[in-house]
Length: 354
Image (tube, rainbow, N blue to C red; front, side, top):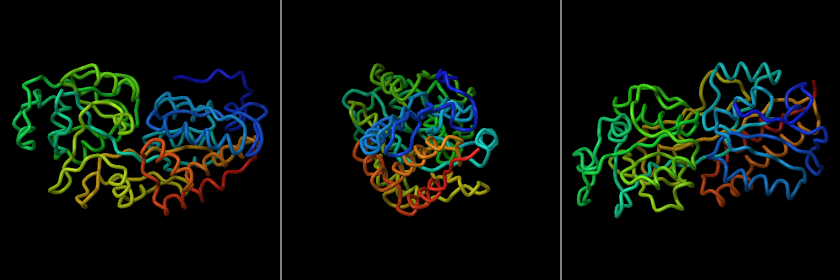
């Protein structure tokens, strides 16, 4: 676990993840957080814009969702980003650390790309079952009939398929395996998980979004999954996934449409906006292989400056301006106005107090 070594005093939630000079909007101070690598490009824009307007320093370590959650629960981070919402056990741990129900709001919505490296081929059509069979090792060559039947006219090589997945605990993996579980038509037997299933043998595990994209670039015949924003600047091919009778490429608009049609998870606290994504939607124009990345914080912090900075920063992130900044920087999908309003209402209640 990549805990920060800050040399700070340990007291109530948030105090060991900020400097003693932490101050709210308009003042100095340093706020420390981290987690999701998928959020990285958006976080750069959010932090730059917020600091320009309000001063202070907001640090965000790109350590992956799993480590980000661990460091938030331990108190090393005042806030964290994760591409998977908290499990019930993590909610309990965070509640103990925070002294109340943790805040969990959607902040970054993006399509995930199934990307591949086949010279001369830039697009392929695949349904959920075929994608699941590729990643579980049932389909091993690119000219397999299951792939060929969905790609008439494409000259597919007999090249062996090399799958690439995340080696670290990853919310991107959670969202990808959730898609395989829901849309794989029974071909994927494991439940959604931040950890790549041990039951799935073979494939290359690499750390972080950059590791996966780098591995794909380096290996002809490979296929993997990553945030679409990390794939756009490469020469990798991208899969269009089957939705109803259509094959849809990854788009921010398609991801946003799925999110708007998906319900909030039941049994969560009022401060928790965990969303149960419907990966089986057949609505025209939807793209069900999407990632919803959350920001997590405590409902109160003993240091007033910490409370002000966390509230100010998260309020900006989920606002219309913050969402547009992320869309411009990372081609993400802005939150639906209703989701943005609900998230703003939750974040606005952050207070200071022991």
